[in-house]
Length: 439
Image (cartoon, rainbow, N blue to C red; front, side, top):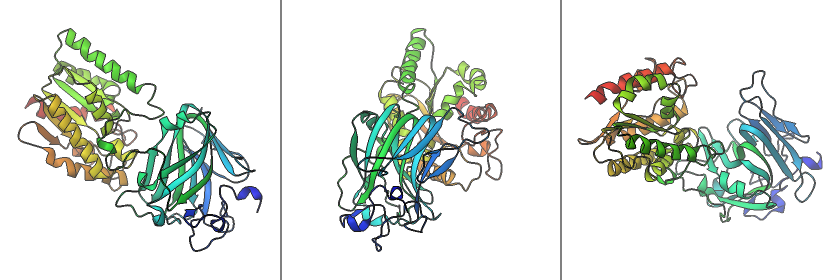
Protein backbone atom coordinates (compact mmCIF):
# COMPACT_ATOMS: atom_id res chain seq x y z
CA UNK A 1 0.00 0.00 0.00
CA UNK A 2 1.42 3.39 -0.95
CA UNK A 3 1.92 6.20 1.52
CA UNK A 4 -0.72 8.23 -0.33
CA UNK A 5 -3.43 5.68 0.44
CA UNK A 6 -3.29 6.49 4.18
CA UNK A 7 -4.22 10.18 4.47
CA UNK A 8 -6.25 12.15 6.98
CA UNK A 9 -5.30 10.76 10.39
CA UNK A 10 -4.00 7.28 9.96
CA UNK A 11 -4.82 5.03 12.88
CA UNK A 12 -6.95 4.81 15.97
CA UNK A 13 -3.93 3.49 17.87
CA UNK A 14 -2.03 6.78 17.51
CA UNK A 15 -4.99 9.01 18.42
CA UNK A 16 -6.39 9.99 21.79
CA UNK A 17 -8.80 7.38 23.11
CA UNK A 18 -11.61 9.93 22.96
CA UNK A 19 -11.15 10.54 19.23
CA UNK A 20 -12.19 8.42 16.27
CA UNK A 21 -9.95 9.01 13.25
CA UNK A 22 -12.42 7.38 10.89
CA UNK A 23 -11.12 3.90 11.52
CA UNK A 24 -14.68 3.44 12.81
CA UNK A 25 -13.92 -0.04 14.12
CA UNK A 26 -13.57 0.71 17.80
CA UNK A 27 -12.43 -2.79 18.73
CA UNK A 28 -9.63 -3.02 16.17
CA UNK A 29 -7.05 -0.23 16.42
CA UNK A 30 -5.44 -0.90 13.06
CA UNK A 31 -4.40 1.57 10.37
CA UNK A 32 -7.28 2.47 8.08
CA UNK A 33 -7.23 1.23 4.50
CA UNK A 34 -9.06 4.18 2.96
CA UNK A 35 -9.81 2.54 -0.37
CA UNK A 36 -11.09 -0.71 1.05
CA UNK A 37 -8.51 -2.67 -0.97
CA UNK A 38 -7.85 -5.01 1.94
CA UNK A 39 -11.22 -4.86 3.67
CA UNK A 40 -10.08 -2.32 6.25
CA UNK A 41 -12.91 -0.23 7.64
CA UNK A 42 -14.88 -0.67 4.42
CA UNK A 43 -14.72 2.99 3.47
CA UNK A 44 -13.79 4.83 0.29
CA UNK A 45 -13.77 8.39 -0.98
CA UNK A 46 -16.20 9.13 -3.80
CA UNK A 47 -16.44 12.31 -5.86
CA UNK A 48 -19.87 13.06 -7.30
CA UNK A 49 -21.91 15.53 -9.26
CA UNK A 50 -25.63 15.68 -10.00
CA UNK A 51 -25.56 12.76 -12.42
CA UNK A 52 -22.51 10.59 -11.83
CA UNK A 53 -19.69 9.69 -9.45
CA UNK A 54 -16.19 8.23 -9.38
CA UNK A 55 -13.99 6.76 -6.67
CA UNK A 56 -10.91 8.74 -5.62
CA UNK A 57 -7.80 6.63 -5.10
CA UNK A 58 -4.26 7.88 -5.75
CA UNK A 59 -4.70 9.75 -9.02
CA UNK A 60 -6.72 12.92 -9.69
CA UNK A 61 -10.25 12.26 -10.93
CA UNK A 62 -12.93 14.14 -12.85
CA UNK A 63 -16.54 13.04 -12.53
CA UNK A 64 -17.51 11.58 -15.93
CA UNK A 65 -20.38 13.03 -17.95
CA UNK A 66 -23.27 10.94 -19.26
CA UNK A 67 -23.93 11.03 -23.00
CA UNK A 68 -26.70 13.57 -22.56
CA UNK A 69 -25.67 15.59 -19.53
CA UNK A 70 -28.29 17.79 -17.92
CA UNK A 71 -25.56 20.20 -16.78
CA UNK A 72 -23.09 19.97 -19.67
CA UNK A 73 -20.96 22.96 -18.64
CA UNK A 74 -20.32 21.80 -15.09
CA UNK A 75 -17.10 20.15 -13.93
CA UNK A 76 -16.29 18.39 -10.65
CA UNK A 77 -12.81 17.07 -9.89
CA UNK A 78 -10.67 16.06 -6.93
CA UNK A 79 -7.11 15.07 -6.10
CA UNK A 80 -4.87 14.15 -3.23
CA UNK A 81 -3.14 17.25 -1.90
CA UNK A 82 -0.99 18.41 0.99
CA UNK A 83 -1.63 20.02 4.34
CA UNK A 84 1.25 18.82 6.53
CA UNK A 85 2.63 16.02 4.39
CA UNK A 86 2.17 14.50 0.97
CA UNK A 87 -1.32 13.09 0.44
CA UNK A 88 -2.81 14.04 3.82
CA UNK A 89 -5.55 16.20 2.29
CA UNK A 90 -8.06 16.12 -0.56
CA UNK A 91 -8.85 19.09 -2.77
CA UNK A 92 -12.29 19.27 -4.37
CA UNK A 93 -12.99 21.71 -7.22
CA UNK A 94 -16.33 22.34 -8.87
CA UNK A 95 -17.41 24.74 -11.60
CA UNK A 96 -20.95 25.76 -12.55
CA UNK A 97 -22.26 22.73 -10.69
CA UNK A 98 -25.77 22.10 -9.49
CA UNK A 99 -24.27 19.62 -7.06
CA UNK A 100 -20.73 18.57 -6.19
CA UNK A 101 -19.67 16.30 -3.35
CA UNK A 102 -16.76 14.59 -1.66
CA UNK A 103 -18.21 11.63 0.18
CA UNK A 104 -16.65 9.13 2.53
CA UNK A 105 -18.80 6.09 1.78
CA UNK A 106 -19.20 2.65 3.24
CA UNK A 107 -18.51 -0.11 0.75
CA UNK A 108 -21.36 -2.06 2.36
CA UNK A 109 -24.82 -0.91 1.21
CA UNK A 110 -26.21 -1.06 4.77
CA UNK A 111 -23.34 0.90 6.27
CA UNK A 112 -20.43 -0.02 8.50
CA UNK A 113 -19.77 2.89 10.84
CA UNK A 114 -21.24 2.94 14.33
CA UNK A 115 -21.24 6.57 15.43
CA UNK A 116 -23.46 6.15 18.49
CA UNK A 117 -20.54 6.60 20.92
CA UNK A 118 -19.94 10.05 19.43
CA UNK A 119 -23.46 11.50 19.47
CA UNK A 120 -22.53 13.74 22.40
CA UNK A 121 -19.28 14.74 20.73
CA UNK A 122 -18.21 16.35 17.48
CA UNK A 123 -17.43 15.85 13.81
CA UNK A 124 -14.22 17.78 13.16
CA UNK A 125 -12.03 18.48 10.14
CA UNK A 126 -9.58 21.00 8.74
CA UNK A 127 -10.60 23.00 5.70
CA UNK A 128 -8.95 25.47 3.34
CA UNK A 129 -11.24 27.51 1.10
CA UNK A 130 -9.28 28.82 -1.86
CA UNK A 131 -12.28 30.09 -3.83
CA UNK A 132 -15.96 30.32 -2.89
CA UNK A 133 -17.16 33.75 -4.03
CA UNK A 134 -19.62 32.03 -6.38
CA UNK A 135 -20.05 28.85 -4.42
CA UNK A 136 -20.11 27.38 -0.95
CA UNK A 137 -20.60 24.10 0.87
CA UNK A 138 -22.69 22.19 3.36
CA UNK A 139 -21.60 19.35 5.65
CA UNK A 140 -23.63 16.17 5.95
CA UNK A 141 -23.74 12.67 7.39
CA UNK A 142 -25.58 9.87 5.62
CA UNK A 143 -26.77 8.04 8.70
CA UNK A 144 -28.48 5.08 7.06
CA UNK A 145 -31.57 4.16 5.08
CA UNK A 146 -33.77 7.24 4.62
CA UNK A 147 -31.46 9.19 6.94
CA UNK A 148 -29.38 12.10 5.63
CA UNK A 149 -28.54 14.99 7.95
CA UNK A 150 -27.12 18.20 6.54
CA UNK A 151 -25.88 21.53 7.92
CA UNK A 152 -26.00 24.47 5.52
CA UNK A 153 -22.61 26.19 5.80
CA UNK A 154 -22.74 28.29 2.62
CA UNK A 155 -22.29 31.77 4.08
CA UNK A 156 -19.66 30.80 6.69
CA UNK A 157 -17.74 28.83 4.06
CA UNK A 158 -17.58 31.91 1.84
CA UNK A 159 -16.18 33.87 4.77
CA UNK A 160 -13.31 31.34 5.01
CA UNK A 161 -12.03 32.14 1.52
CA UNK A 162 -8.36 33.07 1.60
CA UNK A 163 -8.03 32.40 5.35
CA UNK A 164 -5.76 29.37 4.97
CA UNK A 165 -6.33 26.17 6.91
CA UNK A 166 -9.09 26.42 9.51
CA UNK A 167 -10.36 23.86 11.99
CA UNK A 168 -14.12 23.24 12.14
CA UNK A 169 -15.89 21.31 14.88
CA UNK A 170 -19.59 20.54 14.46
CA UNK A 171 -21.55 19.27 17.43
CA UNK A 172 -23.16 15.97 16.52
CA UNK A 173 -26.38 17.57 17.78
CA UNK A 174 -26.28 19.52 14.52
CA UNK A 175 -26.97 16.24 12.71
CA UNK A 176 -28.62 13.68 14.98
CA UNK A 177 -32.39 13.71 15.51
CA UNK A 178 -34.14 11.92 18.40
CA UNK A 179 -35.32 9.00 16.25
CA UNK A 180 -32.02 8.47 14.43
CA UNK A 181 -29.97 5.33 15.01
CA UNK A 182 -26.43 6.06 13.70
CA UNK A 183 -25.40 2.43 14.29
CA UNK A 184 -24.72 1.61 10.62
CA UNK A 185 -23.78 4.88 8.99
CA UNK A 186 -23.41 4.76 5.22
CA UNK A 187 -21.64 8.11 4.71
CA UNK A 188 -19.73 9.30 7.80
CA UNK A 189 -18.66 12.51 6.07
CA UNK A 190 -20.02 14.46 3.10
CA UNK A 191 -18.91 17.86 1.89
CA UNK A 192 -21.37 19.02 -0.76
CA UNK A 193 -21.50 22.26 -2.70
CA UNK A 194 -22.78 24.01 -5.78
CA UNK A 195 -21.77 26.93 -7.96
CA UNK A 196 -18.02 27.32 -8.39
CA UNK A 197 -15.45 26.75 -5.63
CA UNK A 198 -12.21 25.09 -4.55
CA UNK A 199 -11.99 23.54 -1.09
CA UNK A 200 -9.44 21.24 0.57
CA UNK A 201 -10.16 19.04 3.60
CA UNK A 202 -7.94 17.09 5.97
CA UNK A 203 -7.93 15.45 9.40
CA UNK A 204 -11.54 14.25 9.42
CA UNK A 205 -12.34 12.81 12.83
CA UNK A 206 -15.06 12.21 15.37
CA UNK A 207 -14.44 13.04 19.03
CA UNK A 208 -16.40 11.73 22.01
CA UNK A 209 -15.52 14.75 24.17
CA UNK A 210 -15.32 17.43 21.47
CA UNK A 211 -16.96 20.82 21.79
CA UNK A 212 -18.71 22.27 18.76
CA UNK A 213 -17.39 25.61 17.53
CA UNK A 214 -19.05 25.84 14.11
CA UNK A 215 -22.48 27.43 14.17
CA UNK A 216 -25.46 25.32 13.12
CA UNK A 217 -29.22 25.70 13.43
CA UNK A 218 -31.07 23.62 15.97
CA UNK A 219 -32.77 20.90 13.89
CA UNK A 220 -35.68 20.95 16.33
CA UNK A 221 -36.48 24.64 15.73
CA UNK A 222 -34.93 25.55 12.37
CA UNK A 223 -38.29 25.34 10.58
CA UNK A 224 -39.83 27.99 12.85
CA UNK A 225 -36.84 30.35 12.97
CA UNK A 226 -37.31 33.05 10.28
CA UNK A 227 -34.44 33.19 7.81
CA UNK A 228 -33.74 34.18 4.20
CA UNK A 229 -32.98 31.36 1.78
CA UNK A 230 -29.19 30.99 1.88
CA UNK A 231 -28.36 28.53 -0.87
CA UNK A 232 -25.59 29.09 -3.41
CA UNK A 233 -28.08 29.11 -6.26
CA UNK A 234 -30.48 31.50 -4.47
CA UNK A 235 -28.18 34.23 -3.21
CA UNK A 236 -28.23 36.25 -6.44
CA UNK A 237 -31.99 36.33 -6.93
CA UNK A 238 -33.89 35.55 -3.74
CA UNK A 239 -33.58 38.93 -2.01
CA UNK A 240 -34.07 40.90 -5.27
CA UNK A 241 -37.26 38.89 -5.87
CA UNK A 242 -38.46 39.76 -2.38
CA UNK A 243 -37.82 43.45 -3.06
CA UNK A 244 -39.56 43.16 -6.44
CA UNK A 245 -42.63 41.63 -4.82
CA UNK A 246 -42.77 44.47 -2.29
CA UNK A 247 -42.59 46.93 -5.17
CA UNK A 248 -45.30 45.06 -7.08
CA UNK A 249 -47.66 45.27 -4.12
CA UNK A 250 -46.97 48.99 -3.64
CA UNK A 251 -47.56 49.68 -7.33
CA UNK A 252 -50.80 47.74 -7.52
CA UNK A 253 -52.16 49.35 -4.40
CA UNK A 254 -51.19 52.79 -5.68
CA UNK A 255 -53.20 52.10 -8.84
CA UNK A 256 -56.21 51.17 -6.74
CA UNK A 257 -56.11 47.50 -7.71
CA UNK A 258 -57.75 45.07 -5.36
CA UNK A 259 -55.66 42.12 -4.26
CA UNK A 260 -58.26 39.68 -3.02
CA UNK A 261 -56.38 36.40 -3.41
CA UNK A 262 -52.78 35.69 -2.32
CA UNK A 263 -50.85 32.48 -3.03
CA UNK A 264 -47.85 31.86 -0.76
CA UNK A 265 -45.32 29.05 -1.14
CA UNK A 266 -42.23 27.65 -2.83
CA UNK A 267 -41.33 26.85 -6.46
CA UNK A 268 -44.62 25.04 -6.99
CA UNK A 269 -46.43 28.29 -6.19
CA UNK A 270 -43.86 30.30 -8.17
CA UNK A 271 -44.86 28.11 -11.11
CA UNK A 272 -48.08 30.12 -11.45
CA UNK A 273 -45.82 32.69 -13.09
CA UNK A 274 -44.23 30.06 -15.36
CA UNK A 275 -45.87 26.82 -16.52
CA UNK A 276 -49.12 27.83 -14.87
CA UNK A 277 -49.22 31.39 -16.22
CA UNK A 278 -51.95 30.72 -18.79
CA UNK A 279 -54.23 29.23 -16.15
CA UNK A 280 -53.32 32.04 -13.74
CA UNK A 281 -54.30 34.71 -16.27
CA UNK A 282 -57.59 32.96 -17.02
CA UNK A 283 -58.66 32.10 -13.50
CA UNK A 284 -56.90 34.18 -10.89
CA UNK A 285 -56.02 37.53 -12.45
CA UNK A 286 -59.75 38.40 -12.62
CA UNK A 287 -59.95 37.54 -8.92
CA UNK A 288 -57.18 39.96 -7.98
CA UNK A 289 -54.52 37.28 -7.55
CA UNK A 290 -51.02 37.83 -6.20
CA UNK A 291 -48.39 35.06 -6.45
CA UNK A 292 -45.77 34.99 -3.69
CA UNK A 293 -43.96 31.77 -4.53
CA UNK A 294 -40.17 31.51 -4.16
CA UNK A 295 -38.26 28.51 -5.49
CA UNK A 296 -36.48 26.54 -2.78
CA UNK A 297 -38.36 28.09 0.15
CA UNK A 298 -38.86 26.19 3.37
CA UNK A 299 -41.18 27.20 6.17
CA UNK A 300 -38.63 29.47 7.84
CA UNK A 301 -38.09 31.40 4.60
CA UNK A 302 -41.82 32.11 4.25
CA UNK A 303 -41.88 33.29 7.86
CA UNK A 304 -39.03 35.68 7.12
CA UNK A 305 -40.81 37.09 4.08
CA UNK A 306 -44.03 37.65 6.00
CA UNK A 307 -42.15 39.39 8.78
CA UNK A 308 -40.43 41.61 6.23
CA UNK A 309 -43.38 43.14 4.55
CA UNK A 310 -44.71 40.88 1.81
CA UNK A 311 -48.33 41.10 2.93
CA UNK A 312 -48.17 44.49 4.63
CA UNK A 313 -50.96 46.79 3.51
CA UNK A 314 -53.01 43.96 2.00
CA UNK A 315 -56.52 42.89 2.95
CA UNK A 316 -57.21 39.83 0.80
CA UNK A 317 -60.33 37.73 1.12
CA UNK A 318 -58.37 34.48 0.81
CA UNK A 319 -54.77 33.31 1.27
CA UNK A 320 -53.70 29.98 -0.24
CA UNK A 321 -50.66 28.46 1.48
CA UNK A 322 -48.68 25.52 0.09
CA UNK A 323 -45.30 24.90 1.73
CA UNK A 324 -43.18 22.16 3.28
CA UNK A 325 -41.91 19.87 0.53
CA UNK A 326 -38.45 21.51 0.59
CA UNK A 327 -38.19 20.88 4.32
CA UNK A 328 -38.65 17.23 3.36
CA UNK A 329 -36.51 17.13 0.23
CA UNK A 330 -33.49 19.25 1.11
CA UNK A 331 -33.08 18.88 4.85
CA UNK A 332 -35.27 15.87 5.65
CA UNK A 333 -36.87 17.61 8.61
CA UNK A 334 -38.93 15.40 10.85
CA UNK A 335 -42.66 15.69 10.06
CA UNK A 336 -43.31 17.26 13.47
CA UNK A 337 -40.73 19.98 12.74
CA UNK A 338 -42.21 20.87 9.35
CA UNK A 339 -45.74 20.83 10.74
CA UNK A 340 -44.63 23.27 13.44
CA UNK A 341 -43.27 25.55 10.71
CA UNK A 342 -46.60 25.47 8.85
CA UNK A 343 -48.49 26.23 12.06
CA UNK A 344 -46.19 29.19 12.70
CA UNK A 345 -46.92 30.57 9.22
CA UNK A 346 -50.67 30.23 9.78
CA UNK A 347 -50.36 32.06 13.08
CA UNK A 348 -48.35 34.81 11.39
CA UNK A 349 -50.96 35.16 8.65
CA UNK A 350 -53.81 35.35 11.14
CA UNK A 351 -52.04 38.15 12.97
CA UNK A 352 -51.16 40.12 9.84
CA UNK A 353 -54.30 39.44 7.81
CA UNK A 354 -57.07 39.04 10.41
CA UNK A 355 -59.83 39.43 7.83
CA UNK A 356 -58.55 36.77 5.45
CA UNK A 357 -59.67 33.19 5.08
CA UNK A 358 -56.61 30.92 5.00
CA UNK A 359 -56.65 27.83 2.80
CA UNK A 360 -53.79 25.55 3.87
CA UNK A 361 -53.11 23.00 1.16
CA UNK A 362 -51.84 19.58 2.10
CA UNK A 363 -48.36 19.11 0.66
CA UNK A 364 -48.64 17.78 -2.87
CA UNK A 365 -47.40 14.27 -3.65
CA UNK A 366 -43.87 13.82 -4.95
CA UNK A 367 -41.95 10.88 -6.44
CA UNK A 368 -43.57 8.44 -8.79
CA UNK A 369 -44.79 5.83 -6.31
CA UNK A 370 -46.64 6.33 -3.03
CA UNK A 371 -44.22 4.27 -0.93
CA UNK A 372 -41.20 6.55 -1.44
CA UNK A 373 -39.57 7.97 1.69
CA UNK A 374 -40.25 11.60 0.81
CA UNK A 375 -43.86 10.91 -0.19
CA UNK A 376 -44.49 9.11 3.09
CA UNK A 377 -42.88 11.93 5.04
CA UNK A 378 -45.09 14.51 3.32
CA UNK A 379 -48.15 12.43 4.10
CA UNK A 380 -47.13 12.34 7.76
CA UNK A 381 -46.94 16.14 7.71
CA UNK A 382 -50.37 16.32 6.08
CA UNK A 383 -51.81 14.23 8.87
CA UNK A 384 -50.30 16.53 11.49
CA UNK A 385 -51.58 19.76 9.93
CA UNK A 386 -55.10 18.45 9.28
CA UNK A 387 -56.15 19.75 12.69
CA UNK A 388 -55.42 23.36 11.76
CA UNK A 389 -58.94 23.74 10.38
CA UNK A 390 -61.11 25.92 12.61
CA UNK A 391 -64.61 27.31 12.44
CA UNK A 392 -63.55 30.84 11.64
CA UNK A 393 -60.63 31.49 9.32
CA UNK A 394 -58.52 28.40 8.56
CA UNK A 395 -59.35 25.46 6.33
CA UNK A 396 -57.00 22.62 5.44
CA UNK A 397 -57.69 21.40 1.92
CA UNK A 398 -56.31 18.14 0.50
CA UNK A 399 -56.60 18.03 -3.30
CA UNK A 400 -53.91 15.39 -3.77
CA UNK A 401 -56.30 12.76 -5.10
CA UNK A 402 -57.08 15.11 -8.00
CA UNK A 403 -53.39 15.20 -8.92
CA UNK A 404 -52.61 11.45 -8.79
CA UNK A 405 -53.64 8.31 -10.59
CA UNK A 406 -56.12 6.07 -8.70
CA UNK A 407 -53.25 3.85 -7.49
CA UNK A 408 -51.42 6.85 -6.00
CA UNK A 409 -48.70 7.01 -8.64
CA UNK A 410 -47.84 10.25 -10.44
CA UNK A 411 -48.16 10.93 -14.15
CA UNK A 412 -45.45 12.92 -15.87
CA UNK A 413 -48.23 14.68 -17.76
CA UNK A 414 -49.10 16.32 -14.44
CA UNK A 415 -45.71 16.18 -12.65
CA UNK A 416 -43.03 16.28 -15.39
CA UNK A 417 -40.18 15.88 -12.89
CA UNK A 418 -42.31 14.09 -10.27
CA UNK A 419 -42.31 17.22 -8.10
CA UNK A 420 -43.35 20.32 -10.07
CA UNK A 421 -46.58 20.77 -11.99
CA UNK A 422 -47.18 21.08 -15.72
CA UNK A 423 -49.79 23.42 -17.19
CA UNK A 424 -52.23 20.52 -16.94
CA UNK A 425 -51.33 20.17 -13.26
CA UNK A 426 -51.98 23.84 -12.60
CA UNK A 427 -55.36 23.54 -14.30
CA UNK A 428 -56.24 20.66 -11.98
CA UNK A 429 -55.14 22.76 -9.02
CA UNK A 430 -57.29 25.69 -10.15
CA UNK A 431 -60.33 23.50 -10.73
CA UNK A 432 -60.00 22.01 -7.27
CA UNK A 433 -59.77 25.45 -5.65
CA UNK A 434 -62.64 27.17 -7.44
CA UNK A 435 -65.51 25.68 -5.41
CA UNK A 436 -63.80 26.79 -2.21
CA UNK A 437 -63.12 30.27 -3.55
CA UNK A 438 -66.66 30.66 -4.88
CA UNK A 439 -68.08 29.59 -1.53
